[in-house]
Length: 216
Ligand code: DX5
Ligand code: ZN
Image 1 (cartoon, rainbow, N blue to C red):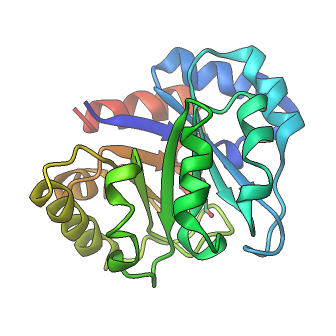
Image 2 (image 1 turned 120 degrees about the horizontal axis):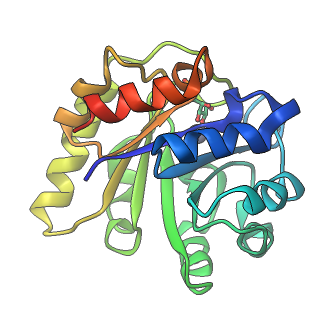
Image 3 (image 1 turned 180 degrees about the vertical axis):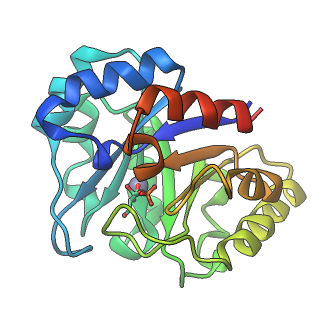
């Protein structure tokens, strides 16, 4: 089954709890939580206290995307804030294998994210130990950017790598996804779909429902 993971980066922070409840009620399975440190990416978003607060608003799966340098410093804190899956960037942690184990030892899921320019080969050894690979289809840092076309080929190649090795790793795609290109990325092999601006611009409930219909 395909999963919709609305990115709350594009939500109205003055009523974040309501926004989270609305996407939950409309049927979105995950809440995609973008954490930015102003170093790995230019922006600063929000951290553990915000995650802890919205944890009270929904039982949905918390999908944390850490765009921070040396994420190994904070794994336990994000776990304690209520994250169900923690994704770290391959480019941000020196000892990726150790960081993945650190996440899994807490009993939650681990993901690894790749920037658009980072080759799939960089994760070939850790592929069997991660639950999800996140393909960035924009350069991380901001919502509302345009989908980078070569991402579709990258998703297709990752899907092949996973299938060839008999794995069942999830493929998440993040950046510039809208109702016009969502079918294309699913066809290429993605099964966890992040959408920020396309969900929170306008009527978020209606947008979630439209995505879920297209993702069937
Ligand atoms: C970008 C973030 C994304 C972002 C997606 O750095 O990782 O999750 O919020 O936003 P849209 O869907 O607007 O491209
Ligand atoms: Zn993200």
